[in-house]
Each structure stands twice: as structure tokens, then as C-alpha cells.
Image 1 (cartoon, rainbow, N blue to C red):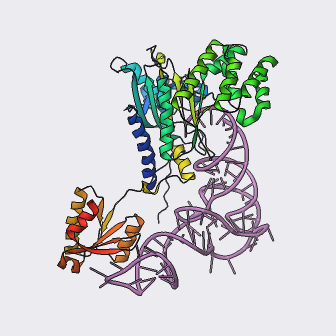
Image 2 (cartoon, protein in one colour):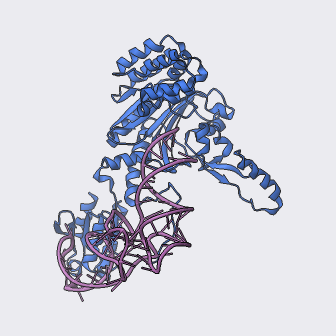
Image 3 (spheres, rainbow, N blue to C red):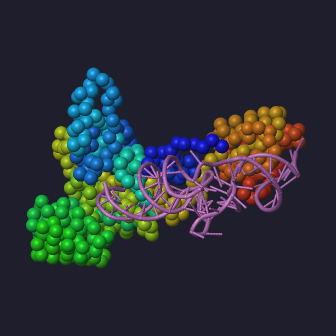
Length: 454
RNA sequence: GAGGCUGUAGCUCAGUUGGUUAGAGCAUCAGAUUGUGGUUCUGAGGGUCGAGGGUUCGAGACCCUUCAGCCUCCCCA
């Protein structure tokens, strides 16, 4: 056999039939819930102008955007200009002479761009869902790919907390339908902002959130060290320690957080937000997590993150409220809130925990054996009748030994075979055999058609 | 961007301090079996040992370089 010498770009994958079917199962589960809640589909291009994406995801995010090289760089007439532009790139800057487009990094920013461009035509509040691949130039590892799918649902044009409540319910419903046990974590950026205000000023918010986000990884002592390094004094660190020590049930956490930062106006608002969502969504796996920060720097209110139980895997969903996302594109005062599902990670979790139902496989239902010209002609006609009624059927491609035809059916997990040979042709009957049980019955052609279309 | 582990048949892997012609299981194909599969038996095909260089009488093994995959940190879905 010839040695194939081709490969896939790092972090990308091909999906075979079985995997595609399982993925489709996840996609359609999520989409059906989105539709149930009144969201409408949207698709945007794989690429955006680089300007649209840059600066929206923080410093780290910018580095992970896949940029597309401009065409025509070998044009001799422009050589001098291109060399100058490339010098800028070498200096770590962007140059539209070298690259001016990029693959999209998430679905939220392209959506904000779409809303900014079309807000005059959209009925507000506008609820859209979007299921598309995104690309990140990250180092691949477990649960991390360079091309992966996100399923987003966002509402813009409404400040109502009802949206947060509905989105929490979408999370709960989807993971319940998929049979994945999860914790839906919720926090508010306002609570984090209030903590920062109390501890020495709003400008410290980023420093504080970066440090406390690491609590479960490095422990309280290391977090305190890091806070000290970032310039916080003993009294301030002490407040943060009290903040991080809040544990227990949601009710207990609520009481404690109110006592700690409820006196701060921003804090009180944030607490009210998460309390409202908690009380009205009535989801039992919704949990307050005051260490939840989330990196994307456009969030302003409630933030979500979904973590799968019983498995080592990063977050499988995340989202939150952003009060001025379209403001980045010159259209202010359109608030929004959204959530995202990470399909590839959900797939990995479901595969690891063996949560895919057996019924996910939906291939050919009936295989007609090919036992000669006259026989297969009849089989072909019957097969087409089945297909016209929506039953997936195949006729074996040539008159081979039974052995081969049986094995083909097994490999493709076709549950039924229909045998029409010389004897059957004479009597206008056929044999239906169910492969799983080995049971076989001889029936008329009409009965066979009825059996499969019933 | 920093670090660790692994690359041998389509897949999972053996391969002794460096020593004859690199093996096994599974899978594939053929036959036993031209109208009843899964089991069994027999046989066959399939390898630039990731790539390049070096040490050596001799390298799958040791050294260097490089590529790829997996994993960890950072960050995220």
C-alpha cells in the first residue's frame, strides 16, 4: 500500500460517520431548546475584518486570533511598501498591508458587529442563536482544539433579568436532555467591582479577579501572596480573604456576601441580580461562585460558567451580560446577554461518561440482498418504494456470496435484510431477517413494505 | 509563549547491556463455504522502525537536530 504523506493542521480533526451522528445529536438537542425559547438562527462569515476582532478579547485573546495573509504580497510593484509593512509585523504590530482579515474567534463579537450594522431593522429585543465553528491559535491539549464549534444564544435590546433567568433555564434544560450532570455557576461582575472598590479602587479589579480566579488551583495562601505582589495592603487582602471564605449553601453564601459588600451600591445591585436569577429560575444545580471572573473583558453584569461533574474537563459553557457591546462598533445603548455551549467538550464529556444513547445511530434500515439480475431488479423496485416512504434502504451492489452481503450489513449496523432469490421471485414472497435476533420470516412483498413503513 | 511524555504494520503495542532476515494481537483480503452472517480453521498482503544527520565493524535501541501527537502551566469552550 502506498504510504500516504498528508496530515491535518494542528488541532483540527476529521469526523467519521459515527462521530458526526453523535455530534448532530448534541447540535439538534441544543438547537431545539433554543427554538423552544424563541431564538432565531443566524450565521456569519468564517472570517471578519481584523479590526472587528482585535482588542475585544484582552491581550491574550489578540494573540490567539488566526490572521489571514493578504493575497498579492508577491506583487513586484508593491515590494517596497510590503517590506515596510512587514517590518511593522516584526515589531509586533498589525499591518493592513500584510493582513486585514482573520478567522472568527467566537460568536459573540461577530454577532455584536451584525447587530451594530442592522439594529434599525431588528425587532428588539432580538433573540438569536448561532451554531458555527470558531478558531483559536491555542496550543491543543485535552478538550482544547484549534477549530471547534460554539452554540450561542444571545438577547440584545433588553436589560430585563428575565433574559438571564431564561438563559439559565436553557442551560439546565439542554444538559438535562443530554443526560450530562453539571453545575451552573453564576456570579456578577458588579460583585467583583464592589470588592475592588472596597479594596482600594476600581482600577484594582483586574488584578483582584485574576488572583482570586486561581483559588481552587493554587489555594488561599498563594492567592494572598499574589495579591500582595499586585500591590494590595494587609487590610485589603484580609477583606478578600473573608470574601473567598464564603462557603455553604446558596442561602448561606447570599447572607454572607450581603454582609460583606451589601453596603456598597454596586455590590448590592450585583447581589440582587444573582439572587433574582437564583430564586426565579428554580434550577437546583445553579450555584453562586464568587470566585468566577471570566476573562472576556466586555462582561458587565451576571456571568455564567458550566462545569461538568465527574470528569476532568474545562468549562463546557460560559456567558454573561454585556451592557455596551455594540458600542465598540459605534452603536451605543444596546444591552445584551448571552450564553455559549462548547460542543466539542460536551462531546468529549459524553464520550468519557458513555452518555450517548444507543439510538443515536440512524443509518440504513434495510439491506436488500443481491442474488442475480432478475432478483435484484425486483429488489430495486421494492427498495425505491421503501425510500419513497422515508425508509433508508440499500441494495447490495453486486451478486456476491451471502457471506459478504451479511458482513456488509453487520459493518453498517443495518438492522434488517431482505432476501429475494429465485424461489421467492416465483412465489412473490421475500425473507425478512432481523440480524440482531436471527429471526426470519417469509412474507409477501406488500406485507414486507407494510412492516417497514408501519 | 514555558515545560514534560511519546513516535515500530491500518489500530493497540512487544522488541533483552547495541548483534543474523523487526514480531504479536486485532483489523483487511482470500479459501474451507455458489441460498443464510457473527464462531472456528488455513493462508496471504501489509514496515523508508516519524524525518535528517552523527557515533559504531554493526543502530529500532545511543547522541544531536527537526517534525508530529498527547499532556501540564497560562488562558479558555
